[in-house]
Length: 406
Image (cartoon, rainbow, N blue to C red; front, side, top):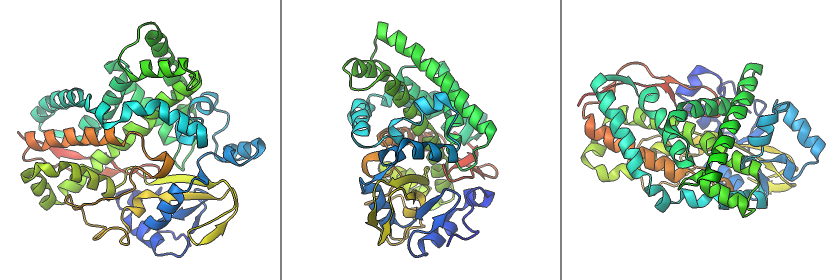
């Protein structure tokens, strides 16, 4: 049974969810949590089984009639949101089967390692400029001053938007993403709908500009895919919007939790300074140690047997990626932060057909940021208490005060 220990809305959970996850892993089967109306998979074996099974879907429309889908939409308070329903609820993230595969193929060429390496110069230059300014200040909030602006700037550059628009786009994205958590208030609903509307208008303007004068950016490439009838116009807008929704917030969170892990494990920080070739493994361990997206759902599209039990069609499952990544059955010393860990087959990017499209971009950003930070601020140290996000949709620090010296 789910105990009071599992309370994602509590402040203590955001700072230290690991005892609650351990408690869930120790329970038999997949306990039901009313907070999400889902059976929770907390062990690596169970999470992987569900994530890799193509009988599991994100969208109940894959198995349920329209009236049932509408009831679920109303029950989740995702109704009466025309722009949100048009561009967010129909995105690649919530699409299954051939349509999902088609949309993923249209955008995938922009997210290969080879293609993303072309962004290294842009990211490096941005980080260097930011550190020039921040090191001179000496005392910063790592999240607000360094981690938060970076992913939006990089994704905006990839899409083809003006750099000055990145802060506004990321604010809209935050408002949309926050509405997916368990606390869906009327105020959050209004913000999510208005943010979606304004973001769509911005992308429509960019679409018109690139249709007339294409460039080497994602919008221009997607317009070519639209002209080739690989996706519709609404799918184009929804896909580009989703890239920012899915990519910027989670990267900010793992940057913050990753730095926090280094600061609270000084032996690992010292090892990384003396052995910078470990950076790629260190970044992987940051994702495993504190997965930025702790929860992801699936529905059973048919009656099935999985995780040792029979389940009826329509059963909702909550995949606790953060818990699976701390499962002692899958990782030696699972609660230890070890930047030499290899192999490191974590689930921070998910698994199966919905594995994170932007995982290479997130790792590139982190590699560049942490390499520069450790090289240019040899005496970085905590500079105050850390505040953590609550909820189950995201995990990471809200604030991380940091002292920098040259």
